[in-house]
Amino acid sequence: MGGGDDGDARPPHQVRRLVLHGTRGVVSRCRDFTAEALADWGWLPADGEEAEERVEDVLLLVSEVVTNACLHAGGPEEFVLRHGDGRLRVEVSDASPEHPRVRAARSPALPGGHGLMVLDRLAGDWGSRDKAPGAVGKVVWLEVSGPPGRATGRPD
Image 1 (tube, rainbow, N blue to C red):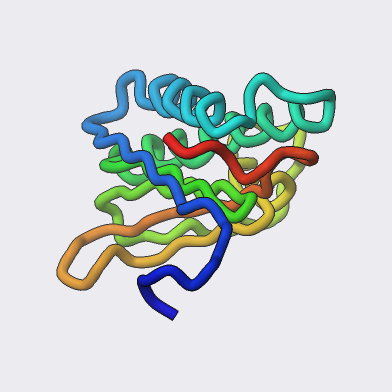
Image 2 (image 1 turned 60 degrees about the vertical axis):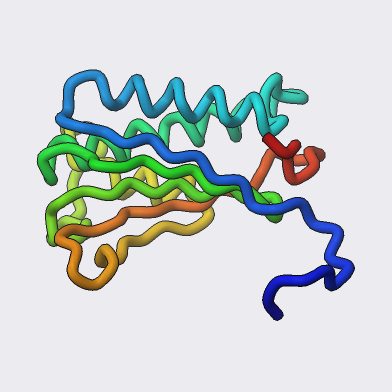
């Protein structure tokens, strides 16, 4: 259960946070922040095509959730990466209480409105939750498993 040395050999979870303001340049800033963390955690350089595709998927997912916060919530306030147990969790918090909702089916040929479809296809899991009690807004999160054949990452 909590604390102490229970013989668990798993590496500790690693967390990186980026505080954000406004919408200008935040998508590329979050992508760069993510790429740097993935390199530190051993996802980059990618070992083969499948691992490379996984990293590209993560960067696309980051672009989608940050862009959605810019378009629908006035911009993200905080971007958090949590890495451990062979998984990456991405969290984007904003000040809007409106949670993402899937819209009626539409043609993939039409522009816009495909962000949640991308999350459904590429993320292992995703969702949203209210911020902590007393705070206004929400956190949209997604999880992706690590590249095949990689350990859970190196400590910072």
